[in-house]
Image 1 (cartoon, one colour):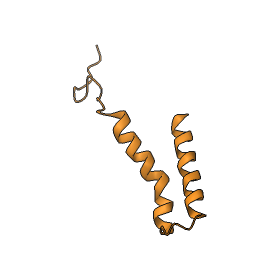
Image 2: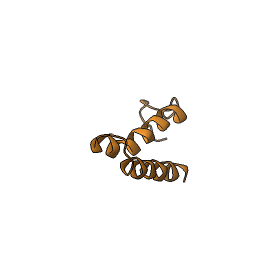
Image 3: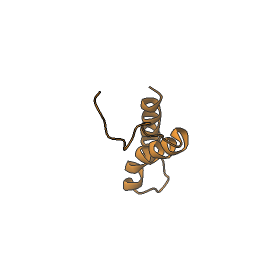
Image 4: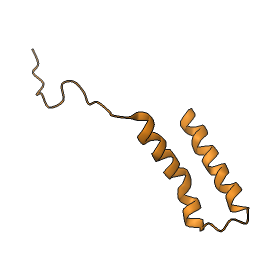
Length: 61
């Protein structure tokens, strides 16, 4: 849910910045929601751990 709100807020920021007199290229404004989402994921998620049995062959008993 928070990711949707973040992405929506970033798109709202793009709409706001696109209507102002700030000279930002439209391609940068189009990338902004995705870049913000990736940055938040990089800093919030942190180090991901794989499964405990990663690389161990499955042996059915």
